[in-house]
Image (cartoon, rainbow, N blue to C red; front, top):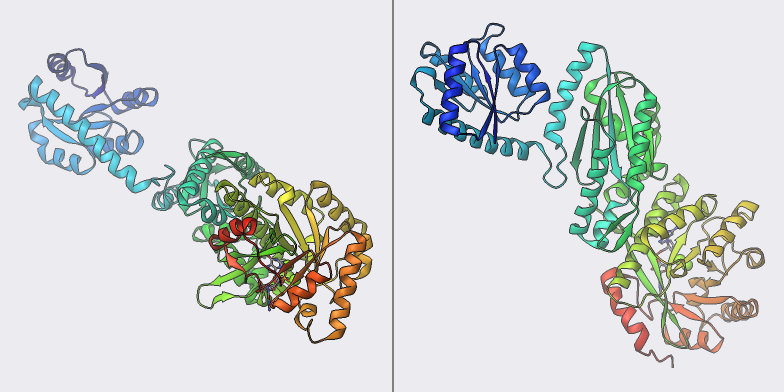
Length: 567
Ligand code: C2E
Ligand code: MG
Ligand code: MG
């Protein structure tokens, strides 16, 4: 059924057209008629038409203006121009302005008209498809960057005309790279589509939802009246995104960071709208993600104050330049793999692989260790789930926690969220409290550690025997075990003092019911010594150096069945 609207002020012509349509199309059409553009507008507002037959000489409008207006506002209908012989040149202009074809009234019959209509509808459909492909992101169906700039241009023009405001929300998903890396691109694509659908749900018809590229989305809000409204939309967006997604049997909890700028309220130059929203989004990320930030002028200055490494680390985190290697921990008696320590690496675009020793201290100083540590925890948990889904036996995954993280009172909530999001059972998570600076024994850290313990997460003290870690910790903290610092293991065979300390710590651990894992074990002699003195497990080059996730599979399988003779 074709819905046809005829816009023509000559009633005789209208009647003829109607007769021809009946003859050519039978009952396959509906017929509406308007005698001027004003009347046509009322029709178009509440009905949708497949076809507009437009007479170029109307009482209330100039021909080409009429056409341009119709193309802008009612682009879904194909347009055929019905012109008199005398205005053929104008008719050609009309086709250049978006009409599908033109017909000279005196030359048509019912057959030619219905044929022209069918062609015009078809041609229009193809044209629509092509423009759609050029303007919309093919994965999510949201507007693409190109259409975004176009809409922004019009929005700014309206904004100046009406003295109104517009807002730009810039959304970047948190840790999306980890999901992509772990589950693959196809899986990542489904996540992006789901996010896009949710984004669509929280904006109005007049607003534009955009996929800027990768895991970056934007929303252009038209006719903004108050800052609160914008905040509400951002919050609604974050709430919707955080709803669990079940994709291919995995339950996933995504979060995002949103940066926002309102023009002209907090941005004087329209061309800064995107840049400022991006800056604000990075601020939201730096706050740990899953929140929104309005751009403020202060953000620019404070970002200039940051040292280069700090900026570099944030950039690297956002760009997904970090990755994890894993090092197995082996039970000395059974030779089973009882843990895998996740160790962060920085794959720098120019400098190659950078050791954590060179950036963890900086990250701790600046506080970026907090979002970085969350990324590590999430990536390691996703990896464990991935191994599990591949049918591999998984041991607990050991994740290093800096004192800075432990001092965050919301650490248990964060970890719980990650475990829920990744569906990893807490018993498969083990944390190592690294001793870069003293973990204060305040009631709040104690509460944090007790919460973790209560969740079922295992707690180890890292680098025990040197540095700050004191015997007091053993009493105060709810621990599962200790990791003997590698400097003590290093000279085990030659330094009798070290040997005595190691023996004493092993005895102490056994008395207190703490498991002791020796780190940096490189030689057979060290293995011998440690197993003779009741050490629970070893980790070190003697077993294997830290390795990428895909090479770890071997250890997960072998760890169960193969024996390593410690003799
Ligand atoms: P760590 O937790 O004590 O990790 C053990 C370090 O010893 C790793 O260095 C590992 O590669 C190295 N290692 C393992 N076996 C041997 C061995 O047999 N001989 C020798 N010489 N070294 C061995 P890596 O990966 O360079 O990590 C250094 C430190 O950086 C870690 O010490 C940990 O304190 C910190 N770190 C690594 N990843 C993270 C992380 O995700 N978060 C935090 N907060 N710290 C991390
Ligand atoms: Mg460690
Ligand atoms: Mg250590």
